Image 1 (cartoon, one colour):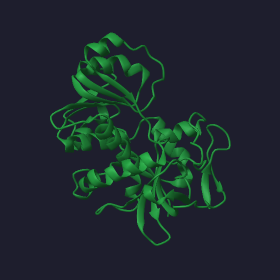
Image 2 (cartoon, rainbow, N blue to C red; image 1 turned 30 degrees about the vertical axis):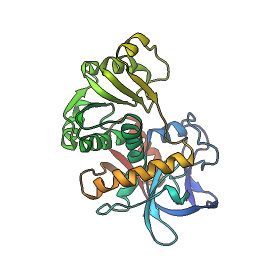
Image 3 (cartoon, rainbow, N blue to C red; image 1 turned 135 degrees about the horizontal axis):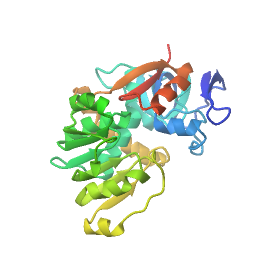
Amino acid sequence: MYAITIPAPGEMVWTQVPDPQPGPGEVVVQVRASAVNRADLLQVAGLYPPPPGAPEYPGLECSGLTPQGEQVCALLAGGGYAEQVAVPREHLLPVPDKIGLEEAAALPEVACTVWSNLTMVAGLTAGETVLIHGGGSGIGTFAIQYAKALGAEVVVTARKAKHPVLVTLGADRCIDYENEDFSQVRADVVLDIMGAPYLEGNVKALKTGGRLVVIGLQGGRKAELDLGALLAKRATVVGTTLRTRPKEQKTQIILGVLNDVWPRIESGEIRPVIDRRIPLSEAAAAHRLVAANEHVGKVLLTRP
């Protein structure tokens, strides 16, 4: 098969590699499409190696066909940038009704990330306010729709040019992070992808009893935390990742997504937001696009 390899940090090459050998309980999926995630950019840069036992190729989600011809999408620990990938059967999801096979590649990583953090970790409920950073990203566009479906008030940060699209997805208020101060928001839950530079503003934005969930470190790893402000608000700061969770935890999350999120997708309440499709062999061009933050939603990598 062919896959995207990383011969040196920052380099990507579409080249022939050995076919995957499935382990016990695994299924080899013929990949129709994958999708770009920020973690893929970090892996290519040499900053985020795959967990032990995962394929060495990038790609945290895909859609495709099983040997039995089932149309599926899958949450992966790696390996989606390839013609084939071996997946634990428990980590396969059926392609939702009314969603195309290619389009389904945009769903597994964002759905599992958003559901696990807004529901499992933060316990977001109807009537609460959530502040979502990076509203124009794949995570952001999905989180807006899911939080709105839960009955929450949704505030997002994003470049001003992206605001009209985010309003159509359900955002009640959009903040231009380049010119406005998001710390003036009063939020029960903050979903943060930036890390260090946003920590102080995020804590200021929290209401009493608020929950800050950090899922990314795009802005940096280290910042000073005012513990007094945290204590005064009886607030919680949680850091989570999805890729390195044990198999059993991922299976639990996938079951939650199937039960809670998939029906909302099949009803049309939530839809995947796809910026564009780029051939898998041209993944480097897709990475440049995502790195420049010029997209809204997901960038798909497709195969004929």
